[in-house]
Image 1 (tube, rainbow, N blue to C red):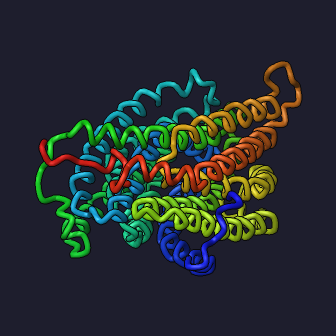
Image 2 (image 1 turned 30 degrees about the horizontal axis):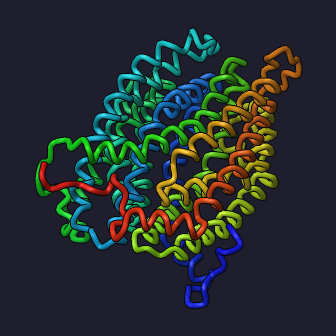
Amino acid sequence: MSSHASLPSHGPRLSTEVGRSAVLAAPLVLGHLSTGLIGFVDSVIAGHHGTQTLAAVSVGTALFWLPMMVPMGTLMSLPPAVSQLDGAGRRAEVGALFRQALWLAVVLGVLLFGFMTAAAHALGPMGIAPAIVPGATDFIHGIRWGVPALTLYLCMRYLTDGLHFTLPTMVLGFGGLLVLLPIGYVLTYGALGFPEMGAGGPGVASAVMMWAQAAAFALYLRRSRRFAGLRLFARFDLPHWPTIRGLLATGLPIGVTVAMEGGLFITTALLIGRLGEVPAAAHQIAINVASLCFMIPMGLAEATTVRVGHALGRGDVDGVRRAARAGYVIVLATQTVSALALLLGNDWIVGFYTDDAVVAALAASLLLYAAAFQFPDGVQVLSAGALRGLGDTRVPMLLAGLAYWGVGMPLGAVLGLGVGGFTTGWGPRGMWLGLIAGLLVAAVLLGLRLRRSSATPRLRRILNETGTDPAPDAARVTSDR
């Protein structure tokens, strides 16, 4: 942060700010961990079913999450918009904004369902190993039915997150695991009279879980006294394009940014899938563990988005910087723990996933690379979260594109696959070096951008431009439909 960002004497102490961020972030982190554990459950079930099944789930999961990043990131425009309305004392407008966000979630879910239906036919032309293609196709065909439910669930979750109430995210996240685990096992192995579906089992089970979570969340919001005053489902609103356009103006750059970062990892998985079953299976184990670690800074980043947005909504310039600084303190501590766990426990962790000694050895070595990018990964996602709270999304999108696709992916392809005339061909290890480089560059660029965007003159200019109405266009819903 810039030198003029020192805490004023009347402001809360840093320890107080850290405590506030930690309390808000804890349920978010646990909720994200529950999401990461979905991949863990799928991978463990598939890994013990067979190496080929695990490799198929690896490719199928990659092809699911690659397009899913765009609607997920786009809907991330909702928490800062809701938080700024809350901070500005305009809670009465939240319900109308939420109903427009639901329309956006429905459209995004339907579009993604169609995309995944078509994408399943592209596995062969993409060069995925032929033995992996049938199982990966079955996984995609199963999980695609849950996509509309997932976008609706994300919309409801981001609403509650923006209102500083993150407990539902945690409870419903872990509740979903109670649905996924037994159904996934039964369908994968063919128990209780069901046919053995192999890699298709986790896909169908995930879709069932997504619909169960969405239905439970909607029922909770409708009956909860906490949200009764918002009148979320009080009436049926037709789509209101100016409001949806405002959400898209903020959210699409976020979606593209998230897709570019996630796409770096996912494209890496697809490229490694060209190398055969063992590299694909080992990568799936390592990337799943790394993803579980990432859930912690991701939850912290979302909490920082909300706290920064709320401070901006109430016109508290110093509060913006205090919220960002508290996030950095926590994320550096959590990433230290994650890095040490991966360095010291890599062999033990891999043992949960597979009994194949060759796959386990390669996966354990990849976890050492995952340990190396814990700090840059935490810093870049925390910086991006703070920038979202400020409504600064377009320039970070370009910076992320440069880091991930201008540095990370080209370097990974050269070192891992030996493309471009280079003959190193280090396989998965080379691809993971590309991941490290991309995240490191992103951490530097996004950190510098946050320092610039959080400077006092720039924040004052944002508040002056909006006058006494600090909420973005995405948070304004006119009553004259």
